[in-house]
Length: 87
Image (cartoon, rainbow, N blue to C red; front, top):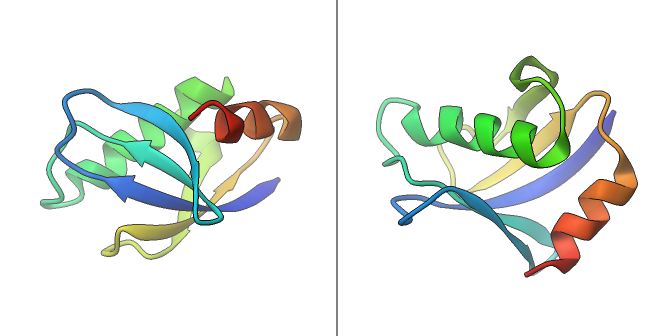
C-alpha cells in the first residue's frame, strides 16, 4: 500500500490532481467541503488518477482538514510520482 499526504483544494472548477506542493500531492476537487462531499470526490479523483477502485483509497487522517493522509492499496508508486511531478 502507498501512504502519502494530500492537500485538498475544494470548490475547484474541476476535479484533478495538480502536482506536488510542499511535500504533499495537491488535488483540486469540484465538491464543497460540506458533509463529506469533498472527501468522497477526493477518493474518486485519486482512484481514477491511480487506476484503482475507489474502495482501494482510504483517508486515514485529516478527515475535516485540507491536509489529509491517504492510503491506497494496489497502486503503482511510479504512477504516483508521475502525478506529483505533473503540476
